[in-house]
Each structure stands twice: as structure tokens, then as C-alpha cells.
Amino acid sequence: MNALINIMALPAHWTADEPTQIASTLLDALLGTLRLSFVSMRLHDPEGGPPLEMVRVAESLQGTAGVQEITQAIDLSTGDTPPTSPSRTQIVLREVNLSIASAPLGLRGEIGTVAAGSVRSDFPTQTERLLLDVAANQATISLQQKRLLHENDRNARLLVDSIPGLVALLTADGEVEFVNRQVIEY
Image 1 (cartoon, one colour):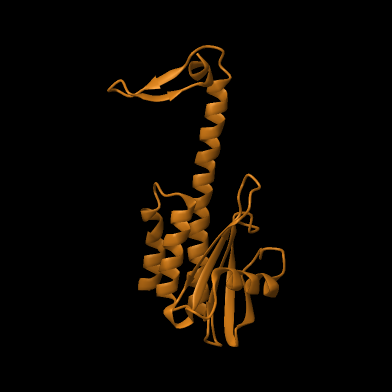
Image 2 (cartoon, rainbow, N blue to C red):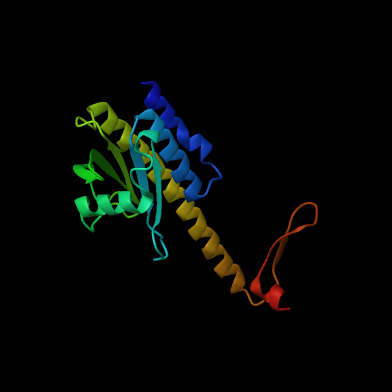
């Protein structure tokens, strides 16, 4: 129950964080909470760029595999399409058998995926599966909020830049907070 409470409390730490900080905090929490061999997250770039991949490896697995090797092994076991529902598979990484559980970030994995691996053959237990799914859902909500805020900011900037006049936003102290393209060109 404490592990679930810890996972549910993570979004309170993500209020102003960037997606990389959200991923990093989540990976660290999952690695410790679930006593994993490794945990990884792949975040798709909403603008079509390369995905961001992050991996945390437990001390017991360090020196056995690197980030690329882990992500390639996961890709080979799951294929090119991201999981649209929780999945479980087995991989062998430098003669180490690992049980892998993954969960989509987003309804159809449009944001990315989180994958957790353990040397235990019974991984994930029902409780571990629940914690992984809750963590993925919490990350999805926070990452969607960040994307929506970024999109709203971009749309607001486009709107203000399309105004043919000079537009500036100042703080109460008189410091420039925002200017449109026309002010910059002027």
C-alpha cells in the first residue's frame, strides 16, 4: 500500500517539470519501489523528432548492459509497434534471463512506453503490474498536460505574432515578459 501511495504522490513533484524530469523521477521511483533490474521509458516527440529514451539500471545489472543494448532487446522482443495494452515478455541479455513488463503511455501508446525488467521469473506479480500501470497512467496524465500547455503556448504565440501591431507584455515591475514578432523586427 505504501508503494501505491508513493507512486500516486509523484505528480505533486511534477508541477513545473519538463518531460525528461518527469521520466527521470518516475524511473527512479519504479526502480526502487519494484526492486527491478532495470526500467526504461521511451517518449515520442510530438513534433516527429527522434524519441527520447531513458533507462535506469540496478547495481546488480550494471556492467552487464547499456541503454542501447536494453532498448534494442526490448524492441526485438516486442516488435516495432508500441504496446497498446500492458504486455509481458522474456528477453536474454548477455546470458541473463529477464522478465519484462511494459505499459503504454497514452491510450494507444502515442506518448510512449515504460518497460520494467527483473531477473525474477515470476515478475510481474499482480501487485507489481498494478503499480506499473498506475505509474504509467500518472505519467501519461502529467505528460499530456505538459504537451497541452506547450501547444497552447505555441498557439498563443502564433496568434499574437499575427497581430499587425506592436504587442508587449510587461510584469508589474515593468520587466518585459513577452513581445510579438513585430516588436522584435521593429
